[in-house]
Image (cartoon, rainbow, N blue to C red; front, side):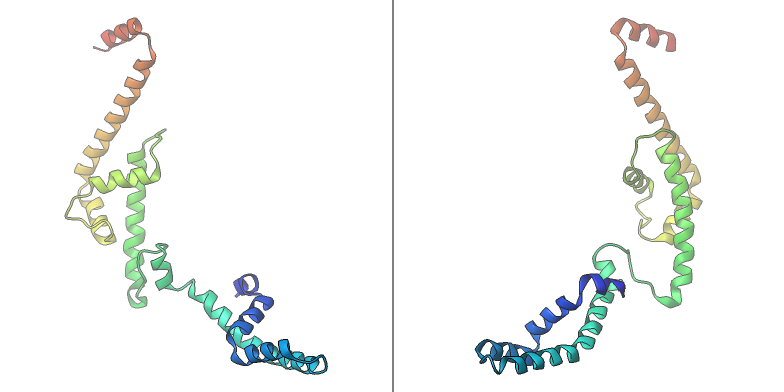
Length: 189
């Protein structure tokens, strides 16, 4: 892969060889104590050994780079929720995609027009709306809740909208001087 050209270049691979290969370690040690006449032969042996090992270390670099893209590693890093079983992947993506469609629609309603609520805050509100019997990480159960409990969800969304309007009105009233505020409140009643 291309990442090997960036992360594990030839000089880096050669350094690794000199650190790990016993034969190169022995040649390096003998080069330090070698006479000037013997040094060129030792250097040639080192170069030959490096050229012999280079394809192997390139394969190792490719395998190492590939390990970063494996399901176990991605799950450990929190990039994915779980690894897929290929036989059940179609079913998994069916429930995942449908859940995301309904979830995004609910998120739009929860966030409202012109809302300053973040995506994560909206997710937390939706998780709070979800009944305790529904596991938020189970796409099928969440979808069944989103499709089946529409009246409860609608009433909670209406309550959120009312709260948002109340907060907006309170913020506007707080900006007015006291006498104007009393006048506006009297007209609203």
